[in-house]
Image 1 (tube, helix red, strand yellow):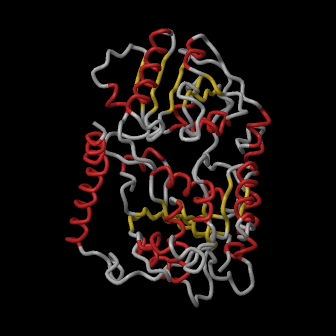
Image 2 (cartoon, helix red, strand yellow):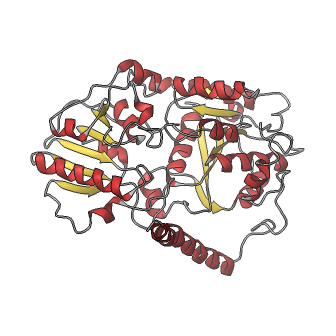
Image 3 (cartoon, rainbow, N blue to C red):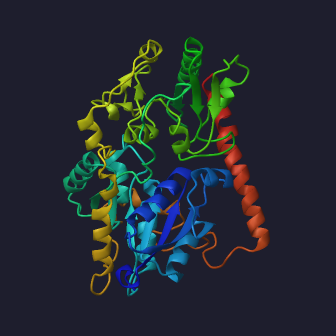
Amino acid sequence: MPASATKSLRVAVLADSDTRWKWGALTARRLAPTDAGIRLDGYLLRGRATPTARQLKEVGVRADSLREVTGVEFLRAMDEASYDVLVLALVGGGVQAMLHGLRATWAGAGRRPVVVTGYVGVVYEKLADGLLLRHGADLVLANSRHDADRFRAVYEGVGADASSVTEVALPFLGGAPYTGEHEPYTVVFAAQPSVPDSRKDRAYLLNRLIGHARKHPEREVLLKLRSKPGEHTTHIEELPYQKLAQGQDLPANFRLVYGHMGEVLDRTDLLVTVSSTAALEALHRRIPTVILTDLGVREVLGNHHFTGSGCLASWDQLDAGHRPVADEDWVARQGVAADGSYETAFDAARERIAKLLDRPGGLPPLNPYYTPETAPGYLPGILARHHLGPDGVPLPGAPAADKEPGPVRQIVRRAARGAYRHGVQRVAPVIRRMGEL
């Protein structure tokens, strides 16, 4: 039954990392009508980045139910359960696999949920690849007017339907606006798991941050970390800053901190990063924000996205007391909505979902741009990684395709997953570094 009739929305979110769970769950809540309740069921896709209990607690987003699943288990759940909206908060390949799997799962069904997907933050690489892997969802969310224009241009450029592109904003913006300096004045460096990726560059940034603390003993200097050693985030972190900091003589006003980014921003006077989405959170609250140029302004770093923002600066400038002023036009184009329009940013998406839910006869089958005919050398491999055949149907022998795992299998799986994570994070980096010798 449509949400408009029940005044309540049943939403499922499938996520493959802590950051994407945060984006997916908060997006689901933003998409619910203001006068409707919401039932939120979370599904965590089993893999190298499946969030730990600590990471889920730090994200701080609650669900009515939460379970870990394989792709095939999730498809079975979608066949058995009834939802109004499904949010796919996955990497592009995962979205494409689930779109094909869901198309096969829902074949012949009278009704299906509205399927929504999008991006966690700044889209600075693999634009065409990522977008086409997401094509086929009913709504592809763009976090800004700038992104919406780019997304439509890509879809129209390959002859794909661009009507799914819907402008919204990042769902986790918020918090109290910045009103002035704290005591002590606090500088926060927002670390990223994979940017930059070399030991030399990461050590350089850490040393400059420590050096800034020494030059300004009256300031509190914080290194905001995403994860603890042994945990994965959306991206692999092979050289955690906390390991690079071990054994160093750290000044008394320098600290490593974890926790919710919003709570850290509550006491921040200057946010410094290479290209973290935390910069957009800070700009939304009008906190002075710096995008570092020390390692160059390069696509591989993602800081090229911030050209024109007025926020680009170096550590030398910061050491000398520079305080950036963001360009208001640039901020508005990026969906940061510092002008107070943030509350209405999801109105268009809510209206589209309501119309789709009320569509006579239900929704048509999902229709991705990639098919066995349009991408025969690409699509089958993407589907096979999730144990699906070219038609989206689970392959013979797919994990848990026919039944729930028993207690022994669950224990074995947990042990195997732990060994896999250890291999990816601890062993593989060592082998790669040895190969570079």
